Length: 516
Image 1: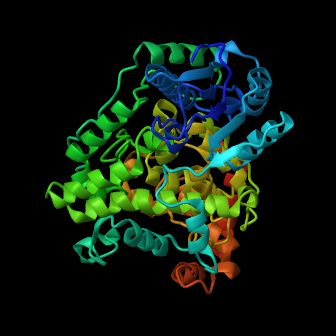
Image 2: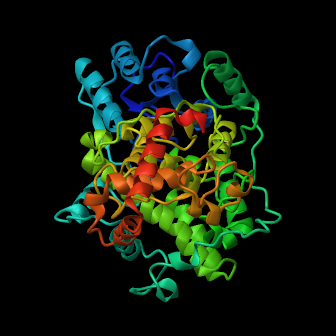
């Protein structure tokens, strides 16, 4: 299409919709339609985003724009350093006025507020924004709403089994492959004192010219943001995402399940896939990822427990949290069932703490923009829950700090799973544990100044102190809870003077968590 030709349809593509084969484009005509992308500073600053997160989005967007141009598309790409619009909505409104297309369309946004803002911008410009369903997901929003209808407790396990039947993934006829729906009991091993041993390094992707330019731009424009770029090696194209998948299936999937919950200091990747960012930017399709994992089991390359545990993360959790997000927003963002009101400790942005597990998890996060799910749930998330951090504050930290963070997946995982702020909609109980859990699942305690078996005194592990204090503060709420009753009974076995000492120690820690 000549640059001066009128645009029939302006197709809006967001930074996490980088699928060149999406239905929005498949139904369009490059001879008459144009693709619109915009890099907006507000997307990096509304939460104080990690440099690597900003760079990943920008690099992937620029590679996507070039891919479309090679295919013959007219791409209207508003680069971050080439326009002054503060946000996507104002940039879209300006281009609708300048281009005067006959129609404007997009795939549904992954973020509630952004969808509203873009629709409002189109309305102000005199258009009705046509919104198409996102065919990247295996469960549509409408299908999830139908599944959810009438369920008082919408548990992921029930949804996951429904999705297995619906998609046929890991099914033998009408029965689950391997004879069981759930192999979690086989997937909770720790490494033991000997550690993980020699680990297969994951595939990494050296920045090319386009990505190097983005890294320089991010360092220059967002130099005061958290994190580092020295180790940036994330997949930013579909080909790289496919290579990352093949590498994972070949070298780490067979042991993924057994050790998926294990932690080892100084080992950020272990047996994890490093595919979540590529999935969330739509560089690779979840159907392709799940099919590759299932094929590895059927070919005898990986055990059923590993494959089921991995597919559960994608077909189960990923689809489930997206459905809950859209069913519960916008109120979900401010849920706070436990009345938590503490500020987020400053060391979440620096890693400057004497608690070894937090220091390692946050340090890894600042270096790579990554930590695996147990570090997120049972280290940084657990500490925030026990301390009583305002859920929205810890949600915004997760959204800012991880390269794979997009709101539809991050917010429910934090509000519902990690912080139990929704009062049990997503998780049947708060995931609370003392320092003993971290001692069992990692080697962090061996080099820490604190002892996980002590709740008070100078050697007391803050996790353990806060764990007992959490149970003490919420004793009445959870006294009859079938999955917390035993923990409450253990609390009640403590003498009142012990409980008072724990309350005092927890209060002192809350006054200055950075002193730990």
